[in-house]
Length: 263
Image 1 (cartoon, helix red, strand yellow):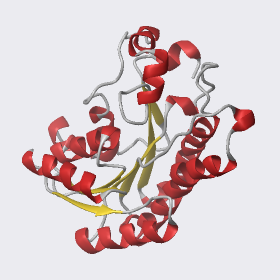
Image 2 (tube, helix red, strand yellow):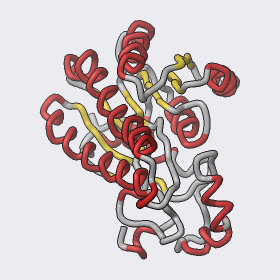
Image 3 (spheres, one colour):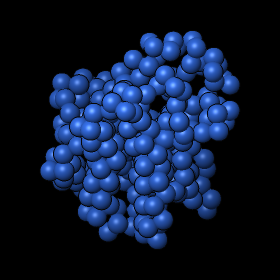
Image 4 (cartoon, helix red, strand yellow):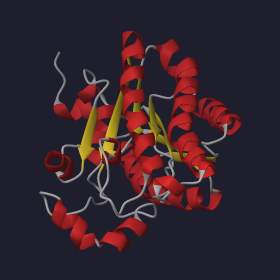
């Protein structure tokens, strides 16, 4: 029998691991999955941030646990994966969101900063996806991986926004999403990406201050920045059976910026 829309979006009984989940966009994604019924494992580097965010989600009636881990470190990533599986038994939804940015002119960009961005934003996504895929999703022939990319991965930036490593990393995330979706689709593991535009967060605070929130909002066809609920819908669509025929895709959630800049 064909399910209702409410049934298709329901994540009751599912488990989700969200990296970079203690604040900002990661916390919004975790809230969305929890509100749809999933049990959440939050992860980021700082235990105190995780504890506070977990308390917030619990107060909203969401079942949540947390593990502090550095998603730029291979051993820590494997520990995160193993401890999550020990706690949950399996992972239905993996959200790769932990990330870093660095602002510097390309000609003076520190190589160690380039490596830091790439290690967290690309290598970390791969290592955790590989671990959860191999030890949970592929054997169970079921799973959804959601990679947080950015509209910065779709093209260049204005001349004043010198983030060459970040842009390159997010372009890599989009291609990684497509490549992994093509390889794991025959085992019913879906892989998709979200490309946010400008959302107020700790990571974007410097850019918003430099360019002005009103200026950046005015550039978007919808004349606004992203808010605390704008990523919830696409997250639950990708994670749930409502999106069971969607894989290898990215979607810009940017108020229309990418449609007038060509990506």
